[in-house]
Image (cartoon, rainbow, N blue to C red; front, side):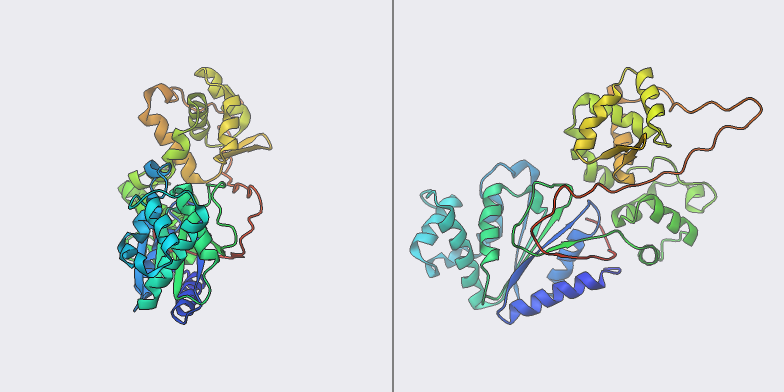
Length: 374
């Protein structure tokens, strides 16, 4: 069940109603891992009464396999190719391995639109494409070509993609950016979990309102932490679902960067001088953090290393624990206390979102709180 997201649900409902009335269109839903993109696609599926639903999902391992995503989406309606122009049908069948290949992006894109329109003559069509940032480029080209030209057709197309993939764009297609879960919605999401409200609020703050983390983290806490008798651990514990959401971005970094990133994750204050000293103690190069900064995982500013999201920090620390050669073998370096005084309290963590890499040409709709994973 969705929690919050009234604005987003209303937008999806309006798109579906418009499509059923013969005025179709598309929408790209973007957000960080675990923010609720898939749940909104599932909401659309549940609301698609009387519509034929076609689904596809981008797969990282198939991102270089041309038209693999398009094949998954259109396979259930390929029997309708006799109803579309012959040249378009031939180009589309060739692209999907069902005929002689024809190198014509125009005919393939036009054939995609014609085939969806033919299916919509029988009943309105809803296309749901999840993890679109992992679709192969050929499928993206054909689908975006078709969606931009949906007019008086009973077709609605919803894409979901991570916002950490700046290279992925659907030019000319409206975009909906999902924001973090607000605190009242986090309380509602975890209602019935048995957690005290104070613990829920602490989790909301620590996870920066990410609903996947809110749902996954309670099981990784100790009994005393769940009861609010002990503070939440730093970094946050990482479940398999959270680790999977961020592991790829960390895994593709150079080994030296991963090592320096693990050191930064182990230093709760984020002070650059302490991170540099800790790196030096294990022969890690703090300059290697530049690659992590370019990847949008951290920002180095005002003499601090700030992780783009608390879950990135948690995943980086977890990745180091799973890779012995990358594991920081020393405790984080902290400033010594003056004689006769207690140790200096650690500064509170700060979080700063990565700035947008560039303005996207697609119109945007502001988003509110979310629900369940993805």
